[in-house]
Image 1 (cartoon, rainbow, N blue to C red):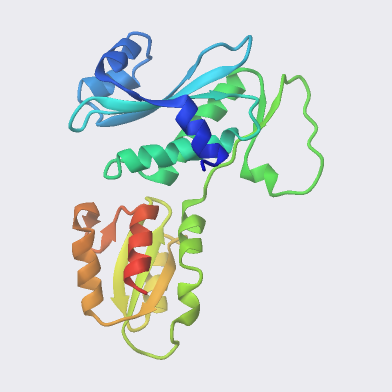
Image 2: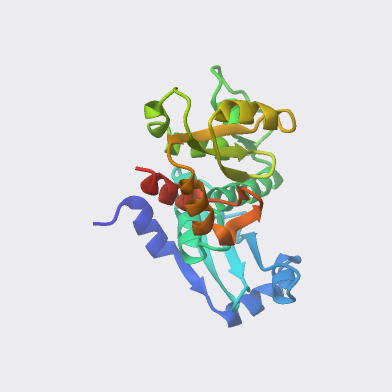
Length: 254
């Protein structure tokens, strides 16, 4: 039986064939054309359909890496589960284009587009910066108030491995670690006898860099993981990994 998010995606989202994308480009302000001409391999976008009646809008993703294709989904501003449905759509995009998209990046990009649209409609928007605080929100001269949260990638990654880190021995010995740099979104797959010392060294360059996962494991594990994600290597031991990749690592390290 489908849950509410799956049901919504089934009823409101669809594939974009090439002819529809070309037609959309005639009314787009640039991003779609950049994909068509090869300047960008993909793009995310938003279209407001009618800001006077039911406030429907479209979120879309278009990819032209191998062939021109995409996905589009209809949303309603006043829907209380709008953020959940947006995340569901981002998941579908990540499943259809796993090598070109990241779940969190897709969701946050759509949320940024949505927040910009809502602000242009004279609506007050707020995210995690206000939602995490106590108090009463008073807003004047706005037609509506909308909560548009974003996902903190580092915290989401850390949550995946929260139980793994509890069983790591404090004794000296080879350890495999994942270290995340929020400035560029890259993850380091490394090994060290004293990973915390390595962490402090890198924090000298980027203070927010942090170990998100740690295991007792032989040296060979590092190379094995590097080989698995070689296509996502940025440089050296740094990789552009998404949630699905981290779940693969979590399973391998059991």
